[in-house]
Length: 590
Image (cartoon, rainbow, N blue to C red; front, side):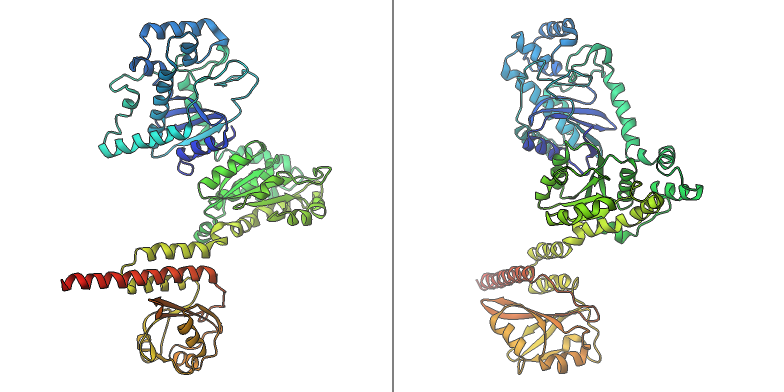
């Protein structure tokens, strides 16, 4: 199985669109407490579907639609039975024996696929597994739904078009309160669902040799059992015990218990804050080492990080793109074991260094470090981190493993988009809130909330004829009068005058006397000298000035370009508010 996961993290629509966009082939298995459904792709197009353990079959759909008769269905099933190992899917059998029009075959398969997609959209929870090993050019092993070496596929449906139609149907049924009548999509309202079995071959997605054919229901139940234990199976007591004995046979019993406890994730609890920092991150680890895979998966589980560990490199690209479709930030961790550098020194998966929104992390031992570290960093690798290596340091192998587990989580949090893009996300949230503001006071409150994430103290001043008058503040503790009584004259204020004249943001050290004598005498001087002045304009004139400093915090330079974007958007909102007020006044006068 190439990739599997939770439909909560990877919605079915995104998976289908990704398969279509990358022109990939494979079987997408979708399972929930209701059963298992399947969608089959060939070069990005949809080929067929199985609805809830085969309870609705393509033969039923075609007969119900009047595309074929019961007699034609019986005849086609007999042809399939006589073909034995060489039998073909029902629709191809009908087409080759001229029992169905090609357009009606398309319509029937499309209805079954749409019904399967709509059914999946109603699930509250479910799992998916994407298998791209079945649609190969050669071989006819068990579980292969299609092999180009055996017959030419004739019915291919554009996945994007089918998805759009399925979404339209889903929306209509949600609107009309008819989600309990999904079978009507294929014209099967009131039809009794058949029990799942594969002996007839009718509607069978998998063209299986008889000796390996099994009940689809049994297969679905087996998959459910496997899925329920798959996520944590790598760290069951027995698996951990065998791994520790294999990797650390020379360690003392106390050392074995220590590393076993770490690998099992027992007794480790990260703070809510550290876990929150790692959200939005996804790790894709390529390694053949059972120990390294277990360590990475355990740490990621503790950090609430989605993780895929695999030896297979054939699905790296689609995995990365699938993760990015879900707005996750992929970290590709590539294991480079002792002595496995290629002859030309080229890094494995070097082509993925070109992905813009992801990080490539090389995991290697100290022996390889001197050979690859600097060249790797020069080519765009985000980091080169040490891995435990029994060959390099047999005496320190266990201690290296413990250090790796204890520090990997903190390292991954530093790669998290919430850590890297925290300020950017903050500003976007500010723009989103400001879009809903209807008054100048709401606009200023939104600005204050945003700036308080970076600055310790924020004050909003309105302009009068000769001075600034404070109207809002946050983080300010004043002696005597409240901050709202603050007034700062324009005289002898070079920085203030420049911001008022140009209407541009000022960030830097201040030297105005009023800050020292008027403002700081009331609220206290900040530890750092950097201040922010952000003017708001209406009709080209400054009407409001927002002041911010770091107070007792150490200074941390904001992204001025983003602040300029926020200022421009706030200016537009101020103008819109003024226009609304003017329009309202004109309407009242009439």
